[in-house]
Image 1 (tube, rainbow, N blue to C red):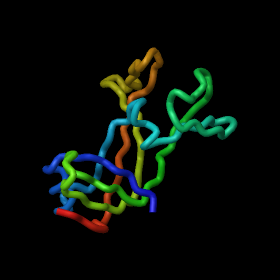
Image 2: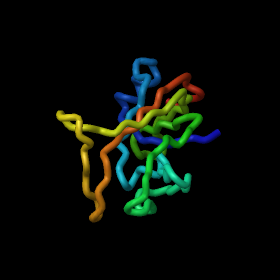
Image 3: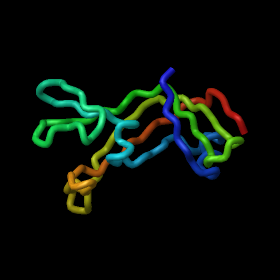
Image 4: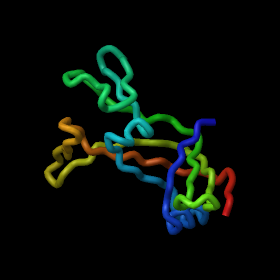
Length: 129
């Protein structure tokens, strides 16, 4: 089973356990992108695990890394509550401004497109509360 580990606040953890929160959203940033998406060359199929690995002029797209479940932890304490929740789907989105233009950021001298990923949450597999 492929598991993504995420830290969340107690409020959101409680909403997941109660079934009120059905989606977990994360912003995809250059320093976290390799956890959420993989980049691939649309012409050759070559895969680039990290945004910095992508050649400057390569025709590239991204696809979600498929996870079976997400292990949610509340905070960073050693005895923190946790839950393992089934992932039923994942989708990433390019973020746009009010005019519909892609939002572009610069990180370490390179431009990247702002994006987020939404994980659809299913059943709670196990919890430690």
